[in-house]
Length: 419
Ligand SMILES: *Cc1c(COP(=O)(O)O)cnc(C)c1O
Ligand code: SF4
Image (cartoon, rainbow, N blue to C red):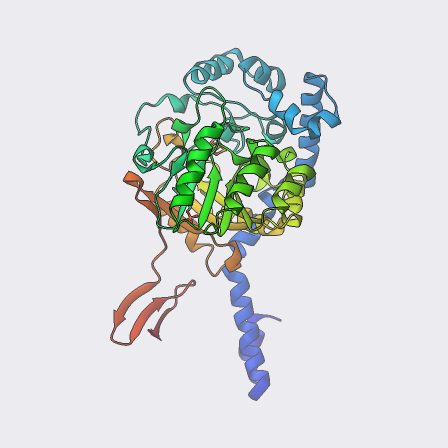
């Protein structure tokens, strides 16, 4: 039915209402026509063509390490076979000697490591959104920016603890990660030597929580919380369960994205023992959503874990409204609720990823109303000085008078409302 036809038609009563609604639905579809046009060209990890490329890469990597599928499924094998020198990278991705020298040079300044799994998702070129998150680039040698833009040192009242809020805090339980993301906002904490925090330090952290009864939410992170052993996770969650005022436990991990093999049946059995457990992860691009990461999410959900995502807004990765929409919609399909989008901070060695606030606002503008509210995370800027996460929103309130507000709706209608 053409618009012209509808407009010319004249109906009374119900039929007229139906006509108006039909016209509106045509208009609504047009609101996302730009997205519908590009949607299929933004690939995720389920795309069949992607799947073929990934399988081929996996075979190549397995052959390189003379390993098999069973090894691949084993997270410890993945950890022990992380790519961490330019020779391995060159062998697998046909890098030139010049590119290798560069990776070596930057690698001497900042550590890097990529799990074979994540490497199988990457494409070897300097604009690939996955490659640039994983492989050192010359841009990291830029010496501007801060090493500690959040003044984290001044927010640690006890060993391993960062406290920035009234009722919740972080336990930094390890400085280890499966992959050392090039955009890491906590780069300063990710030491050159892998180590977990000692029991003694963790005991001091638990003691602090025990003594501060207003703490009802404890977030275990690092580094990556799921690089702790199952036994340590079981112990730590168990100790927190014993503290009556701790209502919820959270874990911060990127393993779902970079090392989904870590989400074993054994780990899930541990997590299931300690509800309520919330896990936040960090998917930054739709291609990171793969059958393997979906399986990891499925297992966690079946263990009663509630999943959320904290993306970082990164230039060349996801600073595009369509990519971000596809990412957030894809996350809902694997039962991960988009929670935050972080504005990248001024961290030394990562400044090439920084986007403007304006770009972030465009991303947010294109989410609210245009897609499910569930797919709309909160856009956050971390206030300098460790003063906390600050939400930023496109402006929807144009004015305020006694008893009324002037609103701008998601599609830019200006309407007065009671308020
Ligand atoms: C991010 C953060 C939290 C958790 O904040 P939410 O907004 O509740 O997710 C808690 N403590 C510290 C120090 C943090 O940086
Ligand atoms: S997993 Fe998180 S903490 Fe670890 S390197 Fe990546 S961004 Fe940093």
